[in-house]
Amino acid sequence: MPRQMPWQHPRPDNEKTWHATRQPPVAWAPTMAIGRERATSLGASGWRGRDVPPSCRCHPGMVWWSPHRTTGETMSLDGYDLEEAYEIHGPQEAREMYGAWAETYDESFGRAWGYIAPREIATILRAEIDPRAAILDIGAGTGLVAEHLRGLTVDAIDITPEMLDVARPKGLYRSLRLGDLTQPLDIPDSSYDAIVSCGTFTHGHVGPECLPELLRITRPGAVFACGTIGPVLDGAGFGSALARLVAAGRITPVVWRDIPIYEGAEHPHKDDRGLVMVFRKL
Image (cartoon, rainbow, N blue to C red):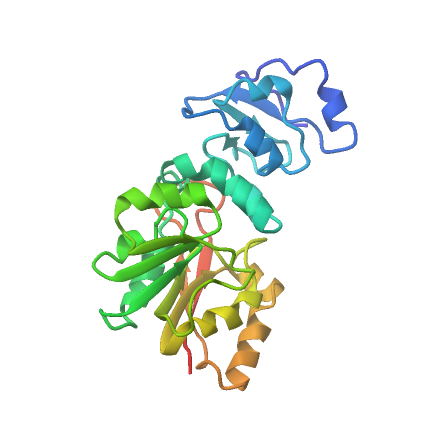
């Protein structure tokens, strides 16, 4: 058990009840976090199965620190934690976690973590498309990719209404729609010239099962520029799914682009690299 930090609050009396059959308890400390209370949402999603202490539900500006995390790695109720995002299982958990995170996502993750993958992927897409292309940003979130596609025609689709509510006033998108990429989409055939995504094809989010539906809604020659990471490529079946589509003559061979994910920030993932799959629909 790591040493108790001087800023830790006393643990509540019923702590053992919460964690009797789970991981050792977390510690909590006040932070400068602001915003509406979201501890209940966090307990339902971001910390799946790890009950939220009643005392913590009263204090939205808390940091939770777990002995199972990398030294120095913390998660605030307004900041959340990348490891928790990576542990999402299914659309409902994604909707809950990102719904609670939406209001502070750009600041607490985008800026604080030096998250540059959206810029890198947007740059790759721009080099591949006609300026008149109609682009669909899948898993668009708060619009971090589209911020680097200004002047182009971009639509957004995301499973989380709160994320789209943050994106909407930025004026980045022609249209914004709610949609679950694991289900059939209410979009006509051959609607788009390009698909872009960042942070969608990752741990516990969306897998390769969505590719046939994305091919349905795109035109012949449409460009795909979608980010992922090595463990997901290897473990979620993207490699074999893409290989089958190439073998079936549905897409061009995939070109893989290696990109940095973060820049200029100190955190446990600062040196992580991403992979961007680039191909065209045949």
